[in-house]
Image 1 (tube, rainbow, N blue to C red):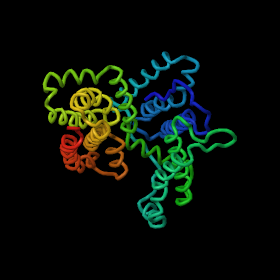
Image 2: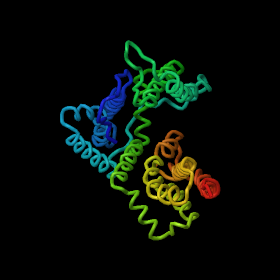
Image 3: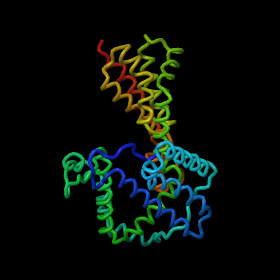
Length: 339
């Protein structure tokens, strides 16, 4: 979850990673202020504290590294993470009151805007790809527009800003209205909104703790290294299960690949590395479809669609996920070995 960077960008940029973090921090700070002003909020102070702790890492992380050093900074960030987990675990984060237009107003607005509503959403991936591939080296007044170490993230930030401007044009809204709606959306998702960052951080902890080596030793106890099919099953199913726990296939991937794929399948059975790890990652995505821990994929859509059952998206996806997982196992076993 920490946003600190141990070193500055290779070259100065307008949309540097540090500036992006500051932007995120100011947006979260706005949400904190609006929460504190909400006198009808049932858990106003603790909800504001939750988001305040989260936003302060973006606002003061790099500044703290510069003046306090990495060791002390990591300690206070770690303390904030623990406090955030306690607040969420005790149910101290909830929704407040919001100025929501009536159903009649929303229906009239939907009819007026029509399918143009999808244009801002489509612009985000298009602008991101175009900037990342074609405009990544563009400069203004001797400065790169995009952080050369984080081009995609910088391009995504610009794409979101452009989409927001287009949205204002279509809807006739205002920046403060957009921020207010962002507060309502974030509150409806709750603590799960920051779950991907927490889980990505946990993946880093697992890597440092040599979890991959522990998994390798555990597999050796129960499965013969010569049993190729069972190794494939364990790798694919393990990627799916570990992703369900982590909520992020990217966090599960280095642990399971270092523990099973590399020593047993690549080195032991001569598997072709590129297709092996590609199918392995795809197996992890099968786990993504079946877990609430992947909040940005499964919980956020339920909130956006106002579903009564917040797990409805997961329930619908499970048959597809299990079918794909079986196909991945058969595909990995049948086509990626050199013999």
